[in-house]
Length: 262
Image (cartoon, rainbow, N blue to C red; front, side, top):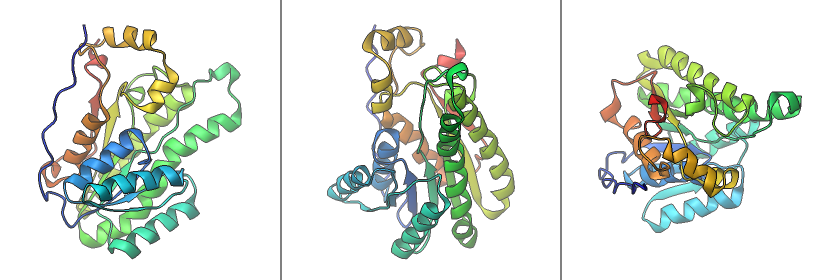
């Protein structure tokens, strides 16, 4: 049985007006959906992606919808690129209030066949690529006494990965540890740090990795018999990025259609 996706409520108008949000990995998938949702709530968006054309495409979409956005391409696992990202963001908007670490990479290689270079690649993008931008935005957030950092982990960070290899699983577990520790350190500065843990979401990455028959077998086993939508992940991020979530920090929120209950 197919369960249709719900119609989500409209963004709360002006909820994030005056805020600047950096969204990494925003060239497609959940990252792009997050950028769209935060812009709809009034935030000015800095769109980061490794692929410059993808970042610019997201910016054009946001601007056509009446939002404010700039594109800053670069590798979030490279400290020089991250410094440039922060510099461009502050030059354009003056401050950074929200960071969403949505950039990520998935590989399926088994440990037996995995080489060191692939291990380093996945850990660098998924973990170091969360650490470097997070560290870089803290001075701006501390100066204003308000900040929201939302990290993308995965249900793989709760258990093991459905699609990825051990390096993916390890990186997503580590993101949860980083989230909790940063939340503890930064709470006194008015900064909350939380993580979202998506299961199987209907993104380009999932579509590339799994054929329709296999996807059906997965979703038939979920209490909610469908893939999640990128817009649903974006809705959760928007809540965590708002004042409505001011008393939530150090948490990991699952978005999996009930998958981890079974």
